[in-house]
Length: 512
Ligand SMILES: [Cu+2]
Image (cartoon, rainbow, N blue to C red):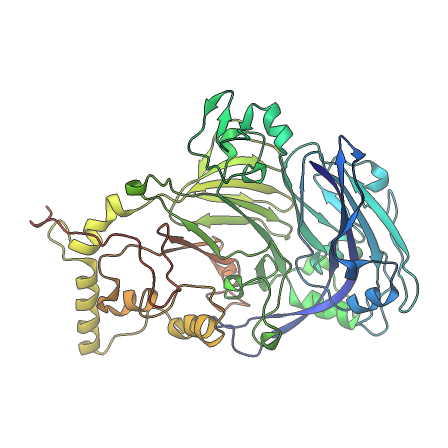
Protein backbone atom coordinates (compact mmCIF):
# COMPACT_ATOMS: atom_id res chain seq x y z
CA UNK A 1 0.00 0.00 0.00
CA UNK A 2 1.34 3.38 -0.91
CA UNK A 3 0.91 6.54 1.04
CA UNK A 4 0.83 10.25 0.82
CA UNK A 5 3.28 11.53 3.40
CA UNK A 6 2.72 15.03 4.69
CA UNK A 7 5.78 16.46 6.40
CA UNK A 8 5.66 19.87 8.05
CA UNK A 9 9.09 21.43 8.39
CA UNK A 10 9.81 24.65 10.24
CA UNK A 11 12.91 26.68 9.38
CA UNK A 12 14.34 28.10 12.57
CA UNK A 13 17.60 28.47 14.49
CA UNK A 14 19.15 26.96 17.59
CA UNK A 15 22.38 25.84 19.19
CA UNK A 16 24.32 22.63 19.38
CA UNK A 17 26.90 21.96 22.09
CA UNK A 18 29.87 20.12 20.63
CA UNK A 19 32.22 18.03 22.77
CA UNK A 20 35.77 19.33 23.06
CA UNK A 21 37.40 16.30 24.70
CA UNK A 22 37.34 12.51 24.19
CA UNK A 23 34.97 11.94 27.10
CA UNK A 24 32.44 14.60 26.16
CA UNK A 25 32.27 15.71 29.78
CA UNK A 26 34.22 18.97 29.68
CA UNK A 27 32.27 22.20 29.15
CA UNK A 28 31.14 22.14 25.55
CA UNK A 29 31.55 24.46 22.57
CA UNK A 30 28.21 26.15 21.89
CA UNK A 31 27.60 26.69 18.17
CA UNK A 32 24.80 28.69 16.59
CA UNK A 33 22.95 26.82 13.83
CA UNK A 34 20.03 27.00 11.41
CA UNK A 35 17.86 23.98 10.71
CA UNK A 36 14.46 22.46 10.10
CA UNK A 37 12.36 21.36 13.07
CA UNK A 38 9.09 19.40 12.77
CA UNK A 39 8.54 16.11 10.98
CA UNK A 40 5.80 13.81 9.73
CA UNK A 41 2.40 15.42 10.31
CA UNK A 42 -0.06 13.03 8.66
CA UNK A 43 -0.37 10.15 6.20
CA UNK A 44 -3.03 9.05 3.76
CA UNK A 45 -3.31 5.68 2.00
CA UNK A 46 -3.32 5.74 -1.79
CA UNK A 47 -3.47 3.18 -4.56
CA UNK A 48 -1.75 4.18 -7.79
CA UNK A 49 -2.01 7.80 -6.71
CA UNK A 50 -5.71 7.70 -5.77
CA UNK A 51 -6.71 8.09 -2.08
CA UNK A 52 -8.28 4.96 -0.62
CA UNK A 53 -9.02 6.34 2.85
CA UNK A 54 -8.90 9.40 5.05
CA UNK A 55 -5.72 11.03 6.25
CA UNK A 56 -4.42 10.14 9.72
CA UNK A 57 -2.71 12.79 11.79
CA UNK A 58 0.43 11.28 13.28
CA UNK A 59 1.94 14.29 15.05
CA UNK A 60 -0.66 16.94 15.91
CA UNK A 61 2.06 19.14 17.42
CA UNK A 62 3.20 19.89 13.86
CA UNK A 63 -0.21 21.23 12.77
CA UNK A 64 0.61 24.60 11.21
CA UNK A 65 -2.93 25.92 11.66
CA UNK A 66 -2.38 26.13 15.43
CA UNK A 67 -0.17 29.21 16.07
CA UNK A 68 1.16 28.01 19.45
CA UNK A 69 2.64 25.00 17.62
CA UNK A 70 4.76 27.39 15.58
CA UNK A 71 6.01 29.35 18.55
CA UNK A 72 6.84 26.14 20.41
CA UNK A 73 9.30 25.25 17.64
CA UNK A 74 11.09 28.59 17.41
CA UNK A 75 14.76 28.25 18.31
CA UNK A 76 14.51 24.43 18.29
CA UNK A 77 16.64 23.68 15.23
CA UNK A 78 18.91 20.66 15.43
CA UNK A 79 21.42 19.09 13.07
CA UNK A 80 20.45 17.09 11.11
CA UNK A 81 16.91 17.96 10.11
CA UNK A 82 14.24 15.23 10.36
CA UNK A 83 14.92 12.05 8.41
CA UNK A 84 12.29 11.36 5.77
CA UNK A 85 11.56 7.72 4.87
CA UNK A 86 9.34 6.74 1.97
CA UNK A 87 8.81 4.05 -0.68
CA UNK A 88 8.46 3.93 -4.42
CA UNK A 89 4.83 4.75 -5.15
CA UNK A 90 4.56 7.12 -2.20
CA UNK A 91 4.00 10.84 -2.65
CA UNK A 92 5.87 13.30 -0.47
CA UNK A 93 4.43 16.67 0.46
CA UNK A 94 6.69 18.94 2.50
CA UNK A 95 4.98 22.03 3.85
CA UNK A 96 7.55 24.64 4.80
CA UNK A 97 6.99 27.35 7.39
CA UNK A 98 9.79 29.87 7.85
CA UNK A 99 9.86 30.83 11.52
CA UNK A 100 12.74 33.25 11.01
CA UNK A 101 16.04 33.39 12.84
CA UNK A 102 15.10 35.13 16.06
CA UNK A 103 17.97 34.07 18.32
CA UNK A 104 20.15 36.72 16.69
CA UNK A 105 19.87 40.42 17.36
CA UNK A 106 18.41 41.81 15.22
CA UNK A 107 16.58 38.75 13.83
CA UNK A 108 17.69 37.42 10.43
CA UNK A 109 14.67 37.45 8.11
CA UNK A 110 16.09 35.43 5.20
CA UNK A 111 13.81 33.32 3.06
CA UNK A 112 14.34 29.52 3.17
CA UNK A 113 13.60 26.66 0.79
CA UNK A 114 13.62 22.86 0.50
CA UNK A 115 15.78 21.40 -2.26
CA UNK A 116 15.48 17.63 -2.79
CA UNK A 117 19.05 16.69 -3.65
CA UNK A 118 19.00 14.10 -6.42
CA UNK A 119 15.26 14.34 -6.98
CA UNK A 120 14.12 14.79 -10.58
CA UNK A 121 11.73 17.54 -9.60
CA UNK A 122 10.44 20.36 -11.78
CA UNK A 123 12.11 23.74 -11.50
CA UNK A 124 9.08 25.20 -9.76
CA UNK A 125 9.55 22.92 -6.75
CA UNK A 126 13.34 22.60 -6.96
CA UNK A 127 13.86 24.76 -3.90
CA UNK A 128 16.20 27.18 -5.62
CA UNK A 129 14.90 30.67 -4.82
CA UNK A 130 16.52 32.19 -7.91
CA UNK A 131 14.58 29.84 -10.21
CA UNK A 132 11.45 29.14 -8.15
CA UNK A 133 10.56 30.71 -4.83
CA UNK A 134 11.82 31.36 -1.34
CA UNK A 135 9.49 31.33 1.60
CA UNK A 136 9.33 34.50 3.73
CA UNK A 137 9.16 34.68 7.52
CA UNK A 138 6.08 34.05 9.65
CA UNK A 139 6.42 36.50 12.58
CA UNK A 140 5.70 35.27 16.12
CA UNK A 141 2.03 35.04 17.04
CA UNK A 142 0.75 35.21 13.47
CA UNK A 143 -0.86 32.59 11.21
CA UNK A 144 1.57 30.39 9.29
CA UNK A 145 2.84 31.60 5.94
CA UNK A 146 3.40 28.32 4.16
CA UNK A 147 4.09 26.66 0.83
CA UNK A 148 4.19 22.96 0.01
CA UNK A 149 6.77 21.06 -2.04
CA UNK A 150 5.85 17.88 -3.88
CA UNK A 151 8.19 15.00 -4.68
CA UNK A 152 7.44 11.66 -6.28
CA UNK A 153 10.62 9.56 -6.43
CA UNK A 154 11.19 7.43 -9.49
CA UNK A 155 14.01 5.37 -7.99
CA UNK A 156 14.88 4.02 -4.57
CA UNK A 157 18.07 5.15 -2.91
CA UNK A 158 19.77 7.55 -0.55
CA UNK A 159 18.76 11.15 -1.12
CA UNK A 160 18.94 14.20 1.07
CA UNK A 161 17.41 17.64 1.24
CA UNK A 162 18.68 21.05 2.16
CA UNK A 163 17.86 24.73 2.00
CA UNK A 164 19.11 26.37 -1.19
CA UNK A 165 18.77 29.99 -0.16
CA UNK A 166 22.32 31.39 -0.13
CA UNK A 167 23.33 27.74 0.01
CA UNK A 168 26.95 28.53 0.91
CA UNK A 169 25.78 29.88 4.25
CA UNK A 170 22.51 28.08 4.95
CA UNK A 171 23.95 24.61 4.30
CA UNK A 172 26.97 25.37 6.44
CA UNK A 173 24.62 26.57 9.16
CA UNK A 174 22.96 23.13 9.25
CA UNK A 175 19.81 23.12 7.08
CA UNK A 176 19.96 19.53 5.82
CA UNK A 177 18.53 16.07 6.43
CA UNK A 178 18.43 12.56 4.91
CA UNK A 179 15.66 11.34 2.59
CA UNK A 180 15.56 7.57 2.15
CA UNK A 181 13.49 5.94 -0.57
CA UNK A 182 12.93 2.21 -0.22
CA UNK A 183 11.66 -0.05 -2.98
CA UNK A 184 8.02 -1.03 -2.60
CA UNK A 185 6.66 -4.57 -2.58
CA UNK A 186 5.37 -3.81 -6.06
CA UNK A 187 8.67 -2.49 -7.41
CA UNK A 188 10.42 -5.55 -5.97
CA UNK A 189 7.85 -7.82 -7.63
CA UNK A 190 8.40 -6.05 -10.94
CA UNK A 191 12.08 -6.99 -10.56
CA UNK A 192 11.13 -10.62 -9.84
CA UNK A 193 11.57 -10.42 -6.05
CA UNK A 194 8.54 -11.81 -4.26
CA UNK A 195 7.53 -12.96 -0.82
CA UNK A 196 5.13 -15.84 -0.24
CA UNK A 197 2.00 -14.60 1.51
CA UNK A 198 1.60 -17.95 3.26
CA UNK A 199 5.13 -18.95 4.26
CA UNK A 200 6.87 -15.57 4.23
CA UNK A 201 9.69 -17.07 2.19
CA UNK A 202 11.44 -14.97 -0.44
CA UNK A 203 11.90 -15.84 -4.09
CA UNK A 204 13.77 -14.35 -7.00
CA UNK A 205 12.29 -15.24 -10.37
CA UNK A 206 10.74 -18.27 -8.71
CA UNK A 207 13.93 -19.50 -7.05
CA UNK A 208 14.01 -19.70 -3.23
CA UNK A 209 16.22 -17.14 -1.45
CA UNK A 210 16.84 -18.80 1.92
CA UNK A 211 19.45 -16.15 2.85
CA UNK A 212 16.61 -13.63 3.18
CA UNK A 213 14.71 -14.19 6.45
CA UNK A 214 10.92 -14.46 6.54
CA UNK A 215 10.85 -11.38 8.79
CA UNK A 216 12.28 -9.21 5.97
CA UNK A 217 10.10 -6.62 4.24
CA UNK A 218 10.54 -4.38 1.22
CA UNK A 219 12.40 -2.06 3.59
CA UNK A 220 15.21 -4.62 3.81
CA UNK A 221 16.30 -3.84 0.26
CA UNK A 222 18.27 -0.83 -0.94
CA UNK A 223 17.08 -1.20 -4.52
CA UNK A 224 14.78 -3.42 -6.53
CA UNK A 225 17.69 -5.84 -6.65
CA UNK A 226 17.85 -9.12 -4.77
CA UNK A 227 21.56 -8.56 -4.04
CA UNK A 228 20.78 -5.32 -2.18
CA UNK A 229 19.14 -7.17 0.73
CA UNK A 230 20.29 -6.07 4.18
CA UNK A 231 19.39 -6.92 7.78
CA UNK A 232 19.84 -3.31 8.88
CA UNK A 233 20.61 0.04 7.26
CA UNK A 234 22.23 3.08 8.81
CA UNK A 235 22.35 6.68 7.64
CA UNK A 236 25.76 8.33 7.96
CA UNK A 237 25.27 11.98 7.06
CA UNK A 238 28.66 13.69 6.96
CA UNK A 239 29.13 17.42 7.40
CA UNK A 240 31.75 19.83 8.62
CA UNK A 241 31.62 23.03 10.62
CA UNK A 242 33.81 26.10 10.84
CA UNK A 243 32.77 27.53 14.19
CA UNK A 244 34.18 30.96 13.23
CA UNK A 245 31.60 31.15 10.43
CA UNK A 246 28.78 30.23 12.79
CA UNK A 247 29.98 32.79 15.33
CA UNK A 248 30.14 35.44 12.61
CA UNK A 249 26.58 34.69 11.45
CA UNK A 250 25.35 34.92 15.03
CA UNK A 251 27.17 38.20 15.61
CA UNK A 252 26.32 39.36 12.06
CA UNK A 253 29.89 40.48 11.54
CA UNK A 254 30.32 38.87 8.13
CA UNK A 255 32.40 35.90 6.96
CA UNK A 256 33.98 35.24 3.58
CA UNK A 257 33.21 31.61 2.64
CA UNK A 258 36.56 31.26 0.88
CA UNK A 259 38.15 31.53 4.33
CA UNK A 260 36.43 28.25 5.24
CA UNK A 261 38.56 26.13 7.56
CA UNK A 262 36.50 23.61 9.52
CA UNK A 263 37.31 22.61 13.09
CA UNK A 264 34.53 20.03 13.68
CA UNK A 265 33.54 17.06 11.50
CA UNK A 266 30.12 15.54 12.09
CA UNK A 267 28.29 12.28 11.48
CA UNK A 268 24.54 12.71 11.79
CA UNK A 269 24.99 16.07 13.46
CA UNK A 270 27.36 14.82 16.11
CA UNK A 271 31.04 14.26 16.67
CA UNK A 272 32.67 11.39 18.55
CA UNK A 273 32.09 10.48 21.40
CA UNK A 274 28.50 11.69 20.93
CA UNK A 275 28.24 9.34 17.92
CA UNK A 276 27.83 6.56 20.51
CA UNK A 277 24.81 8.17 22.12
CA UNK A 278 21.18 7.27 21.50
CA UNK A 279 19.31 9.70 19.28
CA UNK A 280 17.25 11.07 22.17
CA UNK A 281 19.07 12.03 25.36
CA UNK A 282 17.33 12.37 28.72
CA UNK A 283 16.61 16.10 29.26
CA UNK A 284 18.81 16.19 32.36
CA UNK A 285 21.85 15.47 30.19
CA UNK A 286 21.17 18.26 27.68
CA UNK A 287 23.19 20.37 26.95
CA UNK A 288 26.10 19.53 29.25
CA UNK A 289 26.44 15.97 28.08
CA UNK A 290 25.21 16.25 24.51
CA UNK A 291 22.06 16.90 22.54
CA UNK A 292 19.31 14.89 20.92
CA UNK A 293 18.98 14.32 17.19
CA UNK A 294 15.87 13.19 15.30
CA UNK A 295 14.87 9.55 14.92
CA UNK A 296 16.72 7.50 12.35
CA UNK A 297 20.16 9.00 12.95
CA UNK A 298 21.53 6.43 15.40
CA UNK A 299 25.09 5.72 14.19
CA UNK A 300 26.38 3.37 16.88
CA UNK A 301 26.05 0.49 14.44
CA UNK A 302 25.16 -2.82 16.06
CA UNK A 303 25.08 -6.04 14.05
CA UNK A 304 25.40 -9.78 14.58
CA UNK A 305 27.81 -12.19 13.04
CA UNK A 306 26.75 -15.64 11.93
CA UNK A 307 26.61 -18.91 13.82
CA UNK A 308 27.25 -21.90 11.58
CA UNK A 309 26.12 -24.23 14.40
CA UNK A 310 22.63 -22.74 14.26
CA UNK A 311 22.75 -22.01 10.51
CA UNK A 312 22.49 -18.27 11.14
CA UNK A 313 24.20 -16.26 8.39
CA UNK A 314 26.18 -13.15 9.33
CA UNK A 315 24.23 -9.89 9.15
CA UNK A 316 24.36 -7.79 6.05
CA UNK A 317 24.29 -4.12 6.91
CA UNK A 318 24.01 -1.14 4.62
CA UNK A 319 25.80 2.12 5.36
CA UNK A 320 24.08 5.00 3.57
CA UNK A 321 26.92 7.51 3.33
CA UNK A 322 25.90 11.05 2.47
CA UNK A 323 28.24 14.02 2.30
CA UNK A 324 26.61 17.43 2.70
CA UNK A 325 29.89 18.89 4.02
CA UNK A 326 32.32 21.06 2.08
CA UNK A 327 35.22 18.60 2.12
CA UNK A 328 35.50 15.10 0.63
CA UNK A 329 35.14 12.30 3.17
CA UNK A 330 37.32 9.20 2.66
CA UNK A 331 35.29 7.00 4.97
CA UNK A 332 37.11 3.89 6.06
CA UNK A 333 35.43 0.90 7.69
CA UNK A 334 37.58 -1.52 9.69
CA UNK A 335 37.01 -5.24 9.54
CA UNK A 336 35.45 -5.90 6.17
CA UNK A 337 35.29 -4.76 2.58
CA UNK A 338 32.04 -3.18 1.51
CA UNK A 339 30.21 -3.62 -1.76
CA UNK A 340 28.96 -0.48 -3.44
CA UNK A 341 25.37 -1.38 -4.32
CA UNK A 342 24.34 2.14 -5.22
CA UNK A 343 25.59 5.64 -5.72
CA UNK A 344 23.56 8.84 -5.82
CA UNK A 345 20.28 6.93 -5.54
CA UNK A 346 21.09 4.72 -8.51
CA UNK A 347 21.91 1.00 -8.33
CA UNK A 348 25.38 -0.20 -9.27
CA UNK A 349 25.19 -3.07 -11.70
CA UNK A 350 28.83 -4.19 -11.45
CA UNK A 351 29.92 -5.06 -7.95
CA UNK A 352 32.82 -3.06 -6.64
CA UNK A 353 34.38 -3.81 -3.28
CA UNK A 354 36.24 -1.23 -1.25
CA UNK A 355 37.56 -0.55 2.21
CA UNK A 356 37.47 3.22 1.89
CA UNK A 357 34.63 5.07 0.22
CA UNK A 358 35.52 8.54 -0.99
CA UNK A 359 32.31 10.47 -0.60
CA UNK A 360 32.54 13.85 -2.30
CA UNK A 361 30.38 16.75 -1.30
CA UNK A 362 26.89 16.23 -2.67
CA UNK A 363 27.38 12.49 -3.21
CA UNK A 364 25.74 9.51 -1.59
CA UNK A 365 26.99 5.92 -1.53
CA UNK A 366 25.15 2.78 -0.46
CA UNK A 367 27.77 0.34 0.78
CA UNK A 368 26.80 -3.17 1.86
CA UNK A 369 28.88 -5.09 4.42
CA UNK A 370 28.72 -8.67 5.66
CA UNK A 371 29.60 -9.10 9.34
CA UNK A 372 31.78 -12.15 8.75
CA UNK A 373 33.13 -14.00 11.74
CA UNK A 374 36.89 -13.72 12.37
CA UNK A 375 37.12 -16.79 14.56
CA UNK A 376 38.11 -19.34 11.88
CA UNK A 377 41.31 -17.45 11.12
CA UNK A 378 42.09 -15.60 14.34
CA UNK A 379 40.68 -17.40 17.37
CA UNK A 380 43.51 -19.90 17.69
CA UNK A 381 46.14 -17.20 17.51
CA UNK A 382 44.38 -14.92 19.99
CA UNK A 383 43.36 -17.49 22.58
CA UNK A 384 45.85 -20.31 22.18
CA UNK A 385 48.96 -18.91 20.57
CA UNK A 386 50.51 -20.04 17.31
CA UNK A 387 53.85 -20.28 15.53
CA UNK A 388 55.63 -20.29 18.85
CA UNK A 389 53.88 -17.17 20.11
CA UNK A 390 51.86 -17.43 23.33
CA UNK A 391 48.20 -16.41 23.38
CA UNK A 392 47.60 -12.72 22.83
CA UNK A 393 46.30 -12.38 26.37
CA UNK A 394 49.51 -13.86 27.73
CA UNK A 395 51.53 -11.57 25.50
CA UNK A 396 49.67 -8.50 26.73
CA UNK A 397 49.83 -9.63 30.34
CA UNK A 398 53.60 -10.05 30.04
CA UNK A 399 54.00 -6.71 28.29
CA UNK A 400 51.90 -5.03 30.96
CA UNK A 401 53.88 -6.57 33.80
CA UNK A 402 57.19 -5.72 32.16
CA UNK A 403 56.17 -2.15 31.42
CA UNK A 404 54.90 -1.65 34.94
CA UNK A 405 58.25 -2.87 36.25
CA UNK A 406 60.03 -0.61 33.80
CA UNK A 407 57.84 2.37 34.70
CA UNK A 408 56.56 2.84 31.13
CA UNK A 409 53.02 1.51 31.48
CA UNK A 410 50.26 3.82 30.26
CA UNK A 411 46.59 3.07 29.59
CA UNK A 412 45.65 2.26 25.96
CA UNK A 413 44.99 5.89 25.23
CA UNK A 414 44.60 8.85 27.51
CA UNK A 415 41.14 9.03 28.96
CA UNK A 416 40.16 5.60 27.65
CA UNK A 417 38.73 4.37 30.89
CA UNK A 418 37.03 7.68 31.61
CA UNK A 419 35.51 7.70 28.17
CA UNK A 420 33.66 4.44 28.48
CA UNK A 421 32.90 4.87 32.15
CA UNK A 422 31.50 8.33 31.63
CA UNK A 423 29.45 7.49 28.60
CA UNK A 424 28.10 4.15 29.62
CA UNK A 425 28.09 3.90 33.36
CA UNK A 426 27.54 7.42 34.65
CA UNK A 427 24.61 8.01 32.40
CA UNK A 428 23.14 4.52 32.56
CA UNK A 429 22.15 4.94 28.95
CA UNK A 430 22.66 1.27 28.32
CA UNK A 431 23.95 2.03 24.88
CA UNK A 432 27.15 0.14 24.85
CA UNK A 433 28.72 -3.01 25.96
CA UNK A 434 31.96 -1.44 27.10
CA UNK A 435 31.03 -2.51 30.57
CA UNK A 436 33.61 -4.07 32.84
CA UNK A 437 34.29 -6.80 33.46
CA UNK A 438 33.44 -8.05 30.04
CA UNK A 439 35.36 -6.33 27.34
CA UNK A 440 37.44 -3.37 26.36
CA UNK A 441 39.04 -2.60 29.68
CA UNK A 442 39.83 -6.23 30.54
CA UNK A 443 41.27 -6.77 27.11
CA UNK A 444 43.63 -3.94 27.50
CA UNK A 445 44.59 -4.57 31.08
CA UNK A 446 45.08 -8.28 30.71
CA UNK A 447 42.47 -9.55 33.17
CA UNK A 448 41.20 -13.07 32.52
CA UNK A 449 37.51 -12.27 31.93
CA UNK A 450 37.72 -12.11 28.14
CA UNK A 451 39.26 -15.57 27.93
CA UNK A 452 38.17 -17.62 24.96
CA UNK A 453 35.28 -15.38 23.87
CA UNK A 454 35.67 -13.47 20.63
CA UNK A 455 32.56 -11.32 20.86
CA UNK A 456 31.55 -8.56 21.03
CA UNK A 457 33.91 -7.10 18.46
CA UNK A 458 34.30 -3.36 18.04
CA UNK A 459 35.31 -1.91 14.70
CA UNK A 460 36.01 1.72 14.02
CA UNK A 461 34.72 3.47 10.95
CA UNK A 462 36.13 6.92 10.37
CA UNK A 463 37.24 9.67 8.08
CA UNK A 464 40.73 8.67 6.96
CA UNK A 465 41.84 12.27 6.81
CA UNK A 466 42.70 11.39 10.36
CA UNK A 467 43.04 14.93 11.58
CA UNK A 468 39.27 15.08 11.08
CA UNK A 469 38.93 12.40 13.76
CA UNK A 470 39.33 15.24 16.23
CA UNK A 471 37.23 17.88 17.87
CA UNK A 472 39.08 21.09 17.10
CA UNK A 473 42.31 19.10 17.02
CA UNK A 474 41.70 16.87 20.05
CA UNK A 475 41.82 13.13 19.24
CA UNK A 476 39.65 11.05 19.29
CA UNK A 477 36.63 12.99 18.10
CA UNK A 478 35.09 14.10 14.84
CA UNK A 479 33.92 11.68 12.16
CA UNK A 480 34.39 8.45 14.08
CA UNK A 481 31.75 5.81 14.73
CA UNK A 482 31.86 2.32 16.17
CA UNK A 483 30.41 -0.87 14.70
CA UNK A 484 29.69 -3.42 17.38
CA UNK A 485 29.43 -7.02 16.23
CA UNK A 486 27.72 -9.42 18.59
CA UNK A 487 27.34 -13.16 18.61
CA UNK A 488 23.71 -13.95 17.71
CA UNK A 489 21.55 -14.11 20.82
CA UNK A 490 24.19 -12.76 23.20
CA UNK A 491 23.32 -9.84 25.43
CA UNK A 492 26.41 -8.26 26.87
CA UNK A 493 24.43 -5.53 28.64
CA UNK A 494 22.56 -7.97 30.85
CA UNK A 495 23.92 -8.62 34.31
CA UNK A 496 25.41 -11.13 34.20
CA UNK A 497 25.94 -10.99 30.43
CA UNK A 498 24.14 -13.56 28.30
CA UNK A 499 26.86 -15.35 26.34
CA UNK A 500 25.64 -17.68 23.60
CA UNK A 501 29.03 -17.98 21.97
CA UNK A 502 30.77 -21.27 22.76
CA UNK A 503 34.10 -20.67 24.49
CA UNK A 504 36.97 -21.28 22.13
CA UNK A 505 38.66 -24.60 22.77
CA UNK A 506 42.39 -24.75 22.12
CA UNK A 507 43.84 -27.79 20.39
CA UNK A 508 45.58 -30.21 22.75
CA UNK A 509 48.95 -29.81 21.09
CA UNK A 510 50.77 -26.52 20.38
CA UNK A 511 49.70 -25.02 17.09
CA UNK A 512 52.56 -24.80 14.63
CU1 LIG B 1 17.73 28.65 4.46
